[in-house]
Length: 53
Image (cartoon, rainbow, N blue to C red):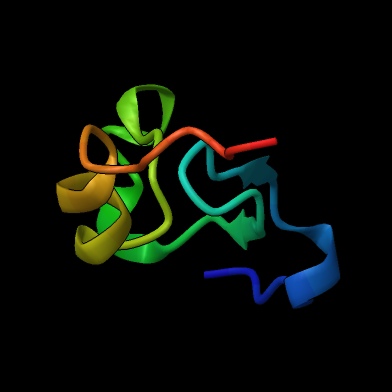
């Protein structure tokens, strides 16, 4: 198995928190379907309140 540097792994941006997150081995088969960086962001996706001006 070839070792990769973390900087060489693909990244996505979490739509819930806006932070970038990196590919993980456990997401190997479902990377195209992964949208959120964590379970917490996934659970909070519909609970966010719009900013008040």
